[in-house]
Length: 214
Image 1 (cartoon, rainbow, N blue to C red):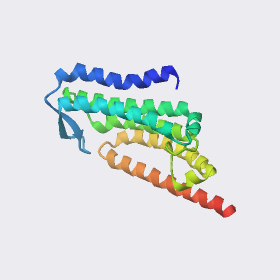
Image 2: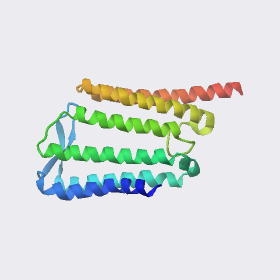
Image 3: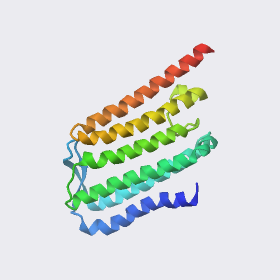
Image 4: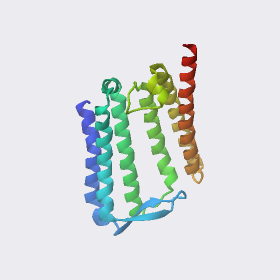
């Protein structure tokens, strides 16, 4: 991993801890920390717990996503697309930091429609997932890991190239969901479940086609 990328990735949890120290005195004792599908707060946390858990969670996710692939038996393959994997790690951590900032803003009295501010960030994350899948090489940690992609390299490649396109298209659909904020939760859920099911079926279908030819 290049030093500049390491600095960027490490800076995200550090920024979250700095923000915690800065905003802690400004927050109410009980902070809104969870919202229903209509965007109304329905869960609260003590501010001390909130500012401890969220930055800690961002740090833990960053460490997990960074170190877990390193114990993969096929880590050399992950090295082949590490630039895209690093970009995904950074995008994921920035997404979590963004949610953290939205929560702080709400508790400062800045109210907004959660769907409208969350969907562009989700679209960004889906785009980076698409980029990652497009370049992913066979491994046990990162990618679309079905019995058929893990068994056959050709099935892996075809599934991931298609998966990259599908996730980028999903990013566009997610942006369009901002036009229907009240339905966006269910639309996004249906979209993600459809993509997962479609790619699983596609990998099985491709494996069966190759197996039949042999």
